[in-house]
Image (cartoon, rainbow, N blue to C red):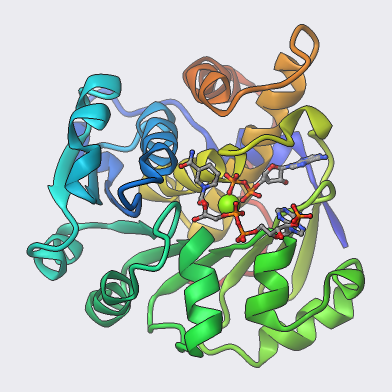
Length: 286
Ligand SMILES: NC(=O)C1=CN([C@@H]2O[C@H](COP(=O)(O)OP(=O)(O)OC[C@H]3O[C@@H](n4cnc5c(N)ncnc54)[C@H](OP(=O)(O)O)[C@@H]3O)[C@@H](O)[C@H]2O)[C@@H](O)CC1
Ligand SMILES: Nc1ncnc2c1ncn2[C@@H]1O[C@H](COP(=O)(O)OP(=O)(O)O)[C@@H](O)[C@H]1O
Ligand SMILES: [Mg+2]
């Protein structure tokens, strides 16, 4: 077991090149938000934009279109029932599942269209539907972000056993391709190739709806910009809870949208740090 520490995030988040443009920071496609759960994709998208993704598109139920535009003018919006496969082809990172509800057709189309070189983050309702329908993982760089009940459904590890590292590895080795697992709880763990990273920051001020949607959006924003994917995921998981811990000094509850607002300043601090910017030993080949 390793500790998911501040240095890992500081190694990943570096100063940007002067001669860069939005195309260098990745195109994120967020797929989710049925007509009742549009807030989930707003939180995904705010976190992805504020993490610095070059371009962010939200494919959703059109009932959410004006709300997304009003909250996030940086984001493009499309109907997830139209031309979804074409939009998937243009993305570097695809995040599916937050607030997706029972939209199985959208999920199946996404799993079919995604390509091996792309990063696919699978969250929320997508994890639950994949478990219910016994859908296999597609050939892509897959990141799974279940909470405990979602992991019980998908990985078939009962919540009581999830504190046992070996039980989670047993479930992971049966999956093909082997995903990066962000197993969320009050003691979040990240399973990567041969190592498990234990998150060392965060607390109960994070126990509020939308907290995981914000994390998924941050993972999308970080993986769009930073490589390898494994390092970017670790940095996003750390940064999400480190910001919450800071905000908790003056806030009883750390709202997801407040965490998102604090991302640019926190990342700027990480980028300015002079700690050894050496590569992180995650053993994750890409
Ligand atoms: N504003 C929006 O649009 C929002 C939209 N959202 C979207 O809604 C979708 C459904 O997601 P979901 O997580 O709310 O429901 P589900 O998958 O049924 O899991 C809940 C069940 O699991 C149990 N449970 C046990 N341990 C647990 C744990 N550690 N963490 C959490 N739950 C735990 C729990 O136990 P109980 O509370 O009953 O004791 C309950 O029985 C998803 O797509 C999400 O993105 C939300 O983000 C909210 C804001
Ligand atoms: N007591 C706690 N301590 C630390 N982190 C917590 C605690 N409760 C919840 N969280 C974090 O909040 C997030 C909840 O994710 P999730 O249940 O998917 O939320 P939602 O789907 O409502 O957005 C996870 O990142 C989890 O680690
Ligand atoms: Mg969730």
